[in-house]
Structure formats: structure tokens, C-alpha cells
Image 1 (cartoon, rainbow, N blue to C red):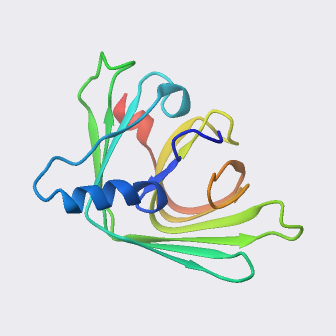
Image 2 (tube, helix red, strand yellow):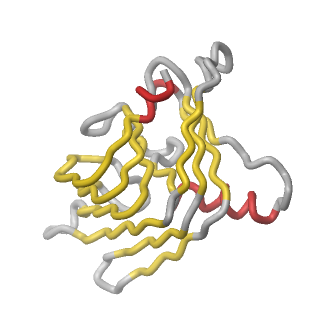
Length: 170
């Protein structure tokens, strides 16, 4: 998973560049991020556009980290396989914000990632529970390797609503 496109798309770390590009481009069309089928929905490549919002990162000296995102409009889309065969389905979410809290676990080998609010998360094929894509509203607790790569070691808890994006777009 290291070196692959960042999995965490909404509305925090991975969309920062898209959000900045969209806001600076004015009326230009938002850029579509394409996640290959092998690392998202298996039967089709997944598209994502994000508009609006912003991200603030707060780092602590003990290695813990917070990322706070304000409302983003996300549109997930079926892109077909290798650029052809899309069924045209989309799923749009108007988020109201999110918080990602990374707490370094004892021993420093991993982090507990707690997501609250509206979060889209892509589980890659090598992740616990992967591949798959979910739009969470509520709270999700994961164990990840670090705040940069977000390689998922385990899904520890969830509360609230989870929408299976791949199922919605089939």
C-alpha cells in the first residue's frame, strides 16, 4: 500500500490538494480522483470529486495528531473498468465536517485512528476488511500503521451509519 494513492479521501488528508485546486480554479470543473478497481470496488474503478471545505492539522509533541475538516461536497462515481463500461451511477454526500484523531499506541508501532463526523474511507486490498469503500457518519475506530500511509491493521469499533459506496454504485 505504501506508494499507492492515499486511501482516505473525505474530507481530510487526501482531498487537501483537490480542495485547494478546486478553490483556486474558480468555476473550473473539480478534478476527479480515480481509485483502481483492485483497491476499491473490485468490479469497477471508483471516481471521487470533492468541492469546498478545508483542513486544519494539529500536531502534538508526543506524536499524536488531529486533522479537522470542514464541510465538503463529495461525489463518488462508477468509472467502469479501465476507463470503459461505466453505468453512470453517482452518490453525493454533503458533509458537515470531520475529525481524525491519531493516538500513538504503546510501543510506537501503530496508531489508534478515531474518525468522527462524515468520513469517506477506502480500504485497499491488503487492509483488514479490504478492499471496499465506505462513507461513515458517526464514529469509526481503526488501528493503522501511521498517519501518512493509514495502512489498516484492524477495524476496532464503529457507531452510526456506514454506506457501502461500492454496493450503491453497482
